[in-house]
Length: 107
Ligand SMILES: N=c1c2ncn([C@@H]3O[C@H](COP(=O)(O)OP(=O)(O)OP(=O)(O)O)[C@@H](O)[C@H]3O)c2ncn1[C@@H]1O[C@H](COP(=O)(O)O)[C@@H](O)[C@H]1O
Image (cartoon, rainbow, N blue to C red; front, side, top):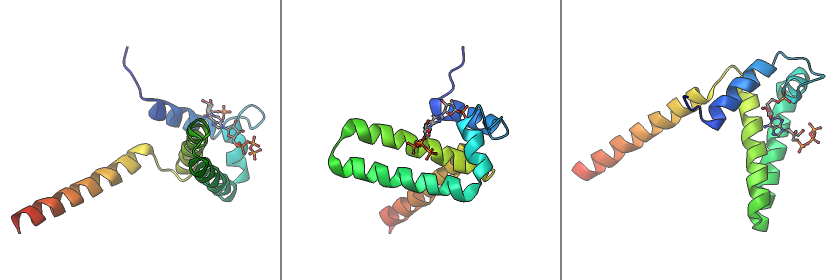
């Protein structure tokens, strides 16, 4: 059996649920409210994550971080972007900083 990582699997479900019945899907309900509402939810979850971190509550931080990542995936999906787009950007940066490192070593 091939393994799919949790985020990739969740991303696929979210993409599918964007057009589901809002009565049966949280993602569909949020999507129906529009990008502004999704972005607002993401902002709220970010604040709640910061509060949990500052309180030093690891359990709460884990829970809020999960909410944050989930809502980020919903926002990306609504915008027609994917985790692969984010991965590619991070890889590009690693490539750039890798080059910077190499340049500073040879300077
Ligand atoms: N991983 C999640 C997930 N994490 C968090 N949430 C929802 O995100 C919301 C978090 O917002 P709040 O804590 O502010 O709670 P709330 O008061 O209910 O939110 P609002 O009424 O303000 O929108 C809650 O309603 C959670 O249920 C999630 N809802 C769905 N999923 C997964 O997403 C997939 C698609 O879900 P459906 O669209 O419901 O089919 C499934 O795999 C689900 O397990």
